[in-house]
Length: 115
Image (cartoon, rainbow, N blue to C red; front, top):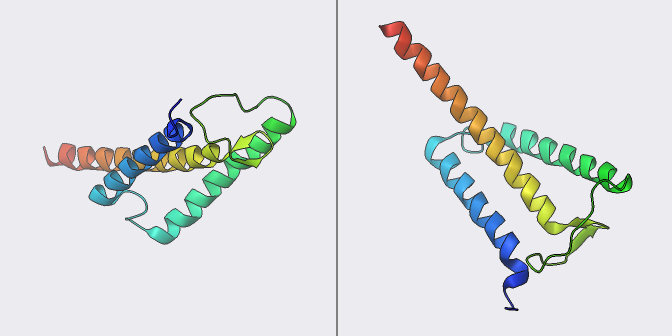
């Protein structure tokens, strides 16, 4: 097994977050539209999902599977560091999609009213 294999999943998450950063920057969707509001919304979203994870772990619903693609670094029992990265990515993706869809719908409304 390659020495880099344990970082494969983390690398994919970081690469995907870089994509969210580029989309956000290019179209001013979330963080680049209003960083103060984004910081609050993003932190609240990640915190909500982390609490959900902690309850799921406590109830025995969620558990960490064994895979050679993860670092093995845990934030808490059954909570790998990659989960925090994934939740950060998931919330950013959701807000970028929401802001982008809202902008497209507003544009369609303006174009439709001009006809």
